[in-house]
Image (cartoon, rainbow, N blue to C red; front, side):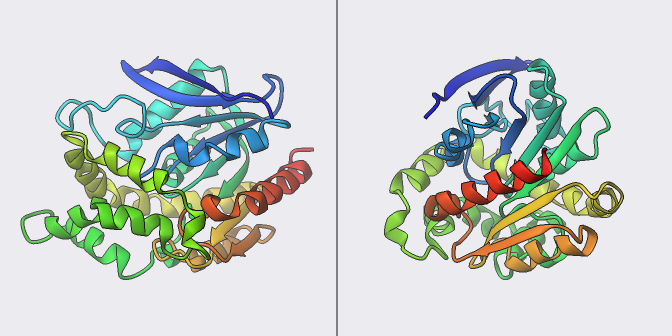
Length: 288
């Protein structure tokens, strides 16, 4: 197993943490994490892919070990998170890569995919949503209510999404055997969420989330025109981004490869071998 390096770079004045492994001359795979996690969710996937690929897994600003400027000192929008990720890739001299997206990583990855500065060779989506069909009820009801009308009436429902019980639920719900999910996962996420000021960061991103939906028509047009190779490896029991979100890719990408696993939102915790196997097979076919 090849070693994983833990590095930082200064991008647009912010410290960005990333994990890196694999041969420098191999095809690049960029892993983009979701809420409420960090690149820690890829701690096992990085070495599983590094034999054949140059793997980069970054922490978004406000998450993990990357910088966490206060909400009044940094514009916490998905546009800005994507700009930082783009800046890191430019810093590393990477403009051609496959991308793995999960949850929040999807709207960041989609912005990179439609950016003509980058050549996205393939997409792997694990609960990385691109269609309205993917939003599972009732999870999103409170978030959409807050994003539409932020205020005293709607904020408690939004804040509940980063409570300790919800963070643990995100990992255990849908898992075929919850004892396979390490408590280190939700414990680490919650500790980082509870840093002073992080609640305002999460609320700012909730308020900005509708911009991602507004970008879906452009993204879906990109899918239709580019026919980019896409693999969806998705937890069939995910009650945040439901399996209809995975099936929807085939509407614009008829050759999309879709696998629904008996797992929840954090499917890597219980199905690492299956997902890494699908990725190796998929990339081995489409990148040749």
